Image 1 (cartoon, rainbow, N blue to C red):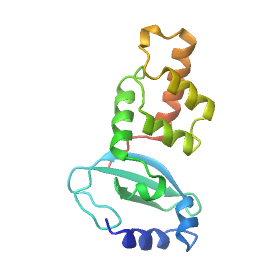
Image 2 (cartoon, helix red, strand yellow; image 1 turned 120 degrees about the vertical axis):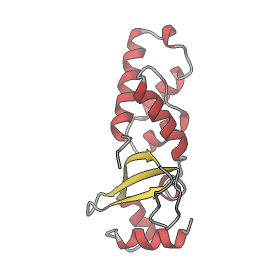
Image 3 (cartoon, rainbow, N blue to C red; image 1 turned 30 degrees about the vertical axis):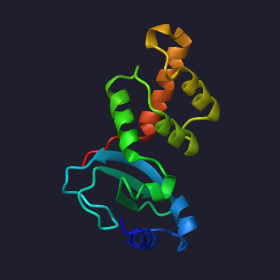
Image 4 (spheres, rainbow, N blue to C red; image 1 turned 180 degrees about the vertical axis):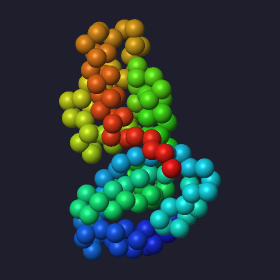
Length: 152
């Protein structure tokens, strides 16, 4: 990863010209698995997971790879991609802690929802009460709406 090139390219597409502020302008809008032909804005090729970001100040969009996305929020795109794919295929499944951490950090879910989910995450589905199941599905749906797997 060329951190210098990433920052230079992102600043050119941001409203702010200071990295600490410009980084906060960008919101995560989706991800997909790379096909080996994709590249990141930093110039790195053969990206495994591509993350689509949108600037909330000027609506610019950019694709960054799984390494460069860590410069924004520090998460591992591969783990989040796996969790989203799993829950997207079966809403009764659980997301993993990195996905929950990202979701609460970006305020997609509340701290209460985070704590609730962490308390029931490893319990067998059949052992949950109906209200717990409903709340888990609601939280899964909130996360899936914020982390879509986009096409192309």
